[in-house]
Length: 110
Ligand SMILES: [Zn+2]
Ligand SMILES: [Zn+2]
Image 1 (cartoon, rainbow, N blue to C red):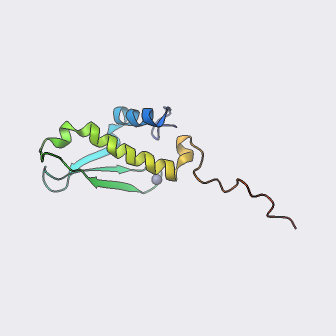
Image 2 (spheres, rainbow, N blue to C red):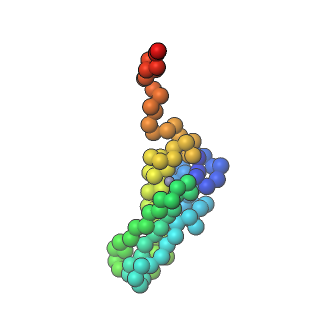
């Protein structure tokens, strides 16, 4: 599979780690309503779909996002990879998930 943002390729696990290492800015981290309500936002590079998800800071720690930003980004990139695998497999070097061509063939005989 290819990285959605650069030519790097590797297994899903490698790309997942690579995204967090090389493209951390693709995940926007912020706070809805004060430091106890952090969220992340990640957008698809090929469609308008965006995921915004609240992060549940286990200990209600105001520094949660700073301390766990890598973990939060990994969660966000995981969501992105699921979306890409389902919606844009051809953009990341995978075969399309649905293969309508397979099987058929005898349909158009006139
Ligand atoms: Zn990359
Ligand atoms: Zn998309």
